[in-house]
Length: 528
Image 1 (cartoon, rainbow, N blue to C red):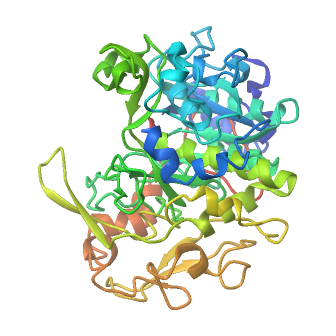
Image 2 (image 1 turned 60 degrees about the vertical axis):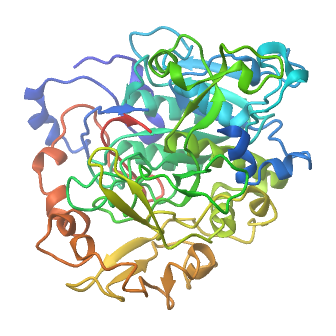
């Protein structure tokens, strides 16, 4: 047995990352000191309208800009670009850099994803091109004075492993006091391969949460996936499937400041979470064609050069040459909207702003006015498909930063902001078959401090706990009603997902089961 690094850097979840031979697994499985063994699985990873759309710009004038708040960006690295400097464009606001990618000895962003994400969080729109006074458009992040802690866990192709992300989360916990790290942004994930209760990624985000760090996670980009007959339901990634973290789906801001015309992004993953059936996403934010800072020469910049904004599009005297910004889409882009919002909330309410209070405030105040449905053309099949605006698609609603900052959630909320679970109790999809079940200790629900209708709204709830009061809204028997269908088995029949002994017999990385706060999570590869 060899150790790539002492202890694997995973002591914070009582775990060890190591390399073992396949032949040694049966012996290890008999060791009473080892509760669970998990593979070191692969993982991966426009502001002008988007920031006003979530009402962040409205609080900037009130001096809430994230000053002094540290946000750990666990991603492909963050390049020290101009817009991540102080207001006078002199000092970098990237206050710490560390690399966790084996084989690439750099903290620079070679892929281009992490820099774009950091710009959505904290770009100040002032420094790039040295033409601040000649701007016709300004791309301003949600928390434009926040500090960035760059914890590089994904390589030049946007790929990483569980262990690289785990070590980065552990470092964020260690550095929380030194750099006032109050927020972690995880615009990455993979398919869940086990229950959140035993997945090492879930245990790690739960540990960060219990150390007072708010964690925002991308929902995933599999909302068009109908390979198992679920119409994109049941596709939330890990660790976004953990009930503690805030899981963020993506909206399209339609290129306007107004939210009235905004629609769901068809690729945004939908709940419930596979196997555990946790209600996700928790809310949605703009994530489509988001203009944010560019890291030149990176993989994304070279691959999607047509997405680089021309200087003439934002400088009055700009040329028709590629500039300092690029347009990217995904729940990766929506997640930093929420991370930035959390920083602003913390700046206003200080240490009374616990992670649970922040999540509760963001969800309670999210805008819950949506159309019942919208349509889109599936780019793969060319078919017209319908998106339903239910709580498994939009969660608690559309992020509203100004409303959230006016919601003093702490210390009134004294429970855990645990997302609920769905239960299914009849053979046909009709009102009353699907119910919300709140996890023990949750501040949500009628027995908690926030009734369901106050969080998710009356448009998606009927009665006190029953969902889908309108049979038209949930008339899809393939997903909800027919126990003979593949979709039913995926969402409601655990044997399809968890019945394969290979999923439980992983052979790399040793992780005891004792969960942090009774929670955990996991998944398969992709940057979101």
